[in-house]
Image (cartoon, rainbow, N blue to C red; front, side, top):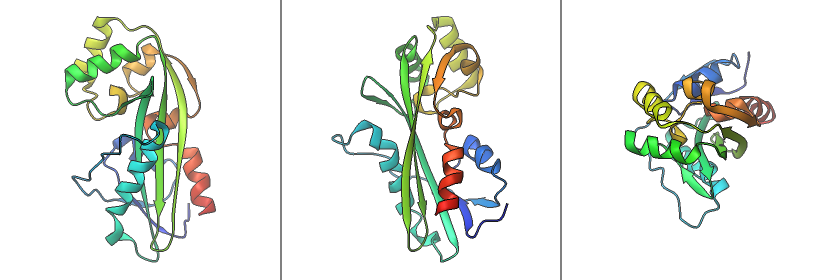
Amino acid sequence: MEFRYKLILASNSPRRKELLSGLDYDYEVVVIPGIDESYPDNIEKRQVAQYIAKKKAAAYEDYLKDDTLVITADTVVILDNKIFGKPSDEACAKQMLRELSGRTHQVVTGVCLSTADKQHAFSVTSEVRFATLTESEIEYYVTRYKPLDKAGAYGIQEWIGFVGVEFISGSYYNVMGLPIQRLFRELKNF
């Protein structure tokens, strides 16, 4: 599909690459390592993902030419007003899944579209309810799938999503890491 800008996806996530490819746009992946993903403690939790997506966009300033659009994104899981980002290790991943077990949480993905003269950011929220997970299910998933690169320590498209997700309200693709239908609309209107 034709698009008026050269697209750059500023993400190393295989899920985001797969989802953006589904739009049939040509794009290039450019990853700048070591971007600070911290956020102020006083920021409203539902704004964190968008805040980080904009922060990531600032690192790509040198890539912004007249004909280039950079897409940055960040996903967080929120439970009881607490942010669950990427787990630091397997023990942390298991603890996150224990806390999510049998509960409904929010998945928020913030996206920032940047060109040389314009920037537009938005976020999308989905609700996910997990069944009650057993210790052996949590152990199996974390040991086998190593979800250390995923917010909330899980990938809905993996085994844990098949056996653990009881209910989802909102965009499934948002839970995967990129609200692709909304992104398509925002790109068309950009």
